[in-house]
Image (cartoon, rainbow, N blue to C red; front, side, top):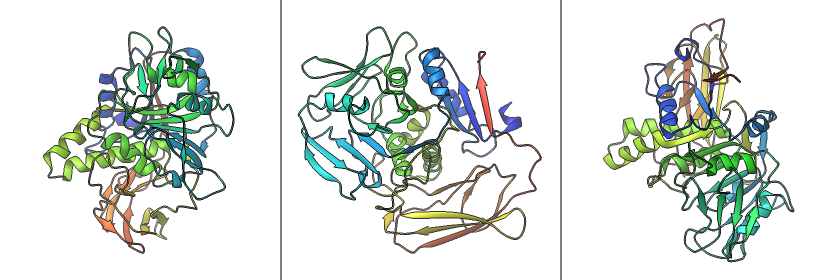
Length: 404
């Protein structure tokens, strides 16, 4: 069915019992097999939930999410965010804060155990709601250790239910009940994206207790990092340019490109691993993106303008600062933008071909296969042409094994 209709978005609706790591792997393989090229052929997501109530709660969120407030426990470019806080997982009592009225990211001393602070922020005890959470550190399907370089509290689910709770170092239980829609990136956590088939787990508990609408996480232990941390290269470093769905999709295409072009066998091995085991949960057509960061401008822009000749388009990439397209480490957290630029066509193009320039071109996207450092003022152009459009295009396809 998918091969014949080639939808722009494909949402795989599945019960938690069906959402095995093998199922995630099969979805990734299937969505790359619809055309002859090695890249992903439809922008996909897996929609699941621990129960009907949570499923309807997730499905009821229709309005796009503009992310203004971020909560993290790992290194991110907080300057690219409107506001937020990082509680360091490495250095105890260290945090970094940015508020909406300042361009500064300020270090602040925090308690040695920040479990209660994290829970209070998620529960919106005071301040603005958390729109995005990003974590790293030791984790399993059943817990997440807040401290990586020190002994801290943890998040766990209740023993017999998908209810998320904080547990501080003294053993105090802190219930998490967060009502606002948010997205969650478990960038460096092992197993956070693996859904248990025999009982409760963290992924389902994030959905139920924290109202996580979209989530990205590893279904296996992580050791390479390109698949998890790379999402931030598009989503945070290029604030506002990509939705979370697009950031995940773009990073996946970067992985595929790396597999096909790298000469480093260890790098290829790691990319092949991450390609199979990073899950995206949620409706891929729902949009969540960072608010544009005018204080810390993005390092490039891409425009696509239709020429006077029907079906012909000119893509122009312009760099606005100095950076590097290439990271020296797979799990790099400092180089910006650190990935190949990707432009998403607003609709699927019909058999596009490259007339001028250098691109990786599919009917869904164009990737500029750039490497190495760059300076501000670089302009790269390409011209593409598509065949006359078909009369029918499917935008959003729902794939389910059971009645809705």
